[in-house]
Image 1 (cartoon, one colour):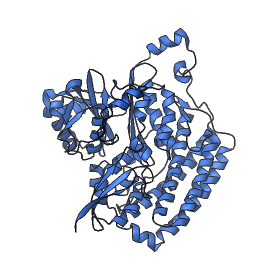
Image 2 (cartoon, rainbow over the protein chains, first blue to last red; image 1 turned 180 degrees about the vertical axis):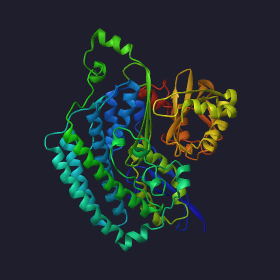
Image 3 (cartoon, each protein chain N blue to C red; image 1 turned 180 degrees about the horizontal axis):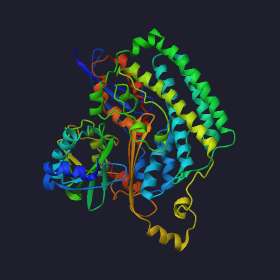
Image 4 (cartoon, one colour; image 1 turned 90 degrees about the vertical axis):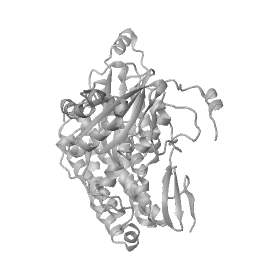
Length: 381
Length: 158
């Protein structure tokens, strides 16, 4: 049978964003794939070179629109290292709070979109309903549901409003009951199992070789989680397990993400307890004034300080909901970063598409790509 | 793993092509190597030292020269390490790492189109994020923002 190339995208229900999967098919069989990216490229790394350090945070929310706070955290850690600033401990706990709620929000969004690809409509509505509770919490302390701009070099913008921890615990209680229902809906469904079991197999050594990280890697039996292996913020003081599975297929990725949500709930309960017991400042004192207020007149003294500010290079690694995210920030003195470089986990997971798509059928593409959890914003940046 | 350990392990294999190992907070160190020994360096870190995961390749334009920074991770040591090599701006090329780590493929495509560093023997060096035939390298310092008129003229369509 003759082969041909077809385009799945840039507008296709499977893509969940603007990108194009070129597929070479022979009948119904996938012979080769070639993802085409760049439809959402906004040049975030270039624009960052033209902005004050705190102004880059705005771009981070747009970088990954389902996990904005995780990306803020990533950038902030690198910027703080480059600028030699230390945040107070309460700010670190608040950042972990953001990270884990963001993981819940992102995974719920993934769950809703993924099961809808499989033709199951009710889980989609349940997933979106429960994600809204997480967004309500974000709105109550950051003021926004999607573009938060909450973190700052040296800490976070503001503390939690009164009564936040009580309502957060209610949401966690609600969610931990829901996970059981999700499992019944999906794992108990014959349609779900037939479309997921044994598909998109990517074994551990191949996954490592191709730079795959996050739930995709852990579903292949490799227990790499930066929160455990290279604890940042206050993860070293918190108690949780790394979610992993051995199946290396679509179902295994589902299991890993579900378990990660349960572990996030466990982490969040500890963080909320700590926050209740330890009030304190949420942003570092004695920040250089030019760093705190980009457009305030800073006077001669400020300019001298800025000119003499030590140079530095910052590097941070964060376990974002999609996997391992890295940031590299070069500070050559002056008010703008000299160079900012990000590593997006989905970028690497997509670059390995050939390894987990070739050999399957065209109808398997939506469940397999759904299990990758593509966020185009962070791939294209 | 400390910078001294890296130096001790790499010096016999690379000799004078190892230009030094600097400490870098939060990582095992930053290994500076000469680009003529690129593949030997990659092989040593991948095969001997267990850095099996290539996380990121980034190019930095220092105007007179360009720097390529590789970020590697070892599951055994649970540590990151940086590799760094410099190339002159008028002769910016280095051997591709995709023969050692397949994950280098897309990172090198991006570094090539953004910072104009050519990776020799790359299997598929073409545009990734920018459109085909795009004539600029946006992350070079010489690429200024706020000059839209000039951009429109120069874009070449194929």
